[in-house]
Image 1 (tube, one colour):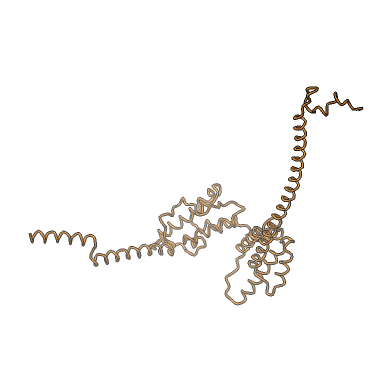
Image 2: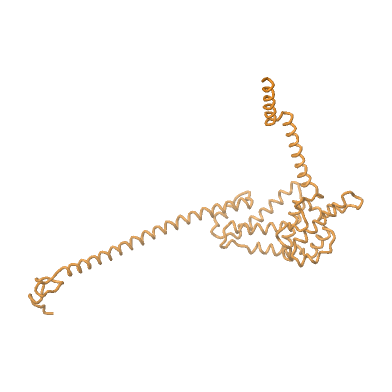
Length: 328
């Protein structure tokens, strides 16, 4: 009996330790989990920082931008390509920062693979007739330089075109938000074309203030005349507001006017509705009353009957055969 009890106790203890592992087992599992987590984090950091790394989702048939290159849109398309390659840590292959390695280097094959991948992405971002013309270009930097020479316009005509669009842009029937968005898009295009060097000297603040003042004047100049009052108040401020704050002020005024006009229109419509309803009600009441009188007269006539001539519509006191016909 004692041996049976010991055997039963052993089975219970085995199951207990199976369900609840020993602390050393738990610590081993946690250590393995931390190691795997660190390995995954290391792989992510490696992909995010190493320009020679290619992710499993990177393949030559990928289309990194939705905007296809055509002759007029090179400026916009090239910016989209640069943004996409920057996220993949491959932008250095375009400007030559990541120079071609020697064949003796251990990373030469990987450099060729990454550079060829960038070439494929560039070819996929163009319309087919343009892609076929550049199939024989070997390296990404050569392809990018060739595209810039062939499709990149001189900055002079394009800058003139953008400045002319800004001068001809008026608010018109657009909301303030739509007008400001169009204007800001043109400003961004001009900034993208202007290769202004990065400067950290104190005088950069004066340059930025001048640029903000120029944008503020362009924004206020072509607003509708209904914003003349708020425009005058903004121009009287010293120092002048930046264009974003001026836009916020004018947008609040537009929203307030919209609410006020909506309330006024609603009141006018309600008043007109009340007036029309009252007039129509009087007319209906008059028509109903008139019809009721006629109906009552008709009913009174049909209810009378003459016993002398045996006809309806009058009684014996009104019968002409008894009282005589009138002289008409």
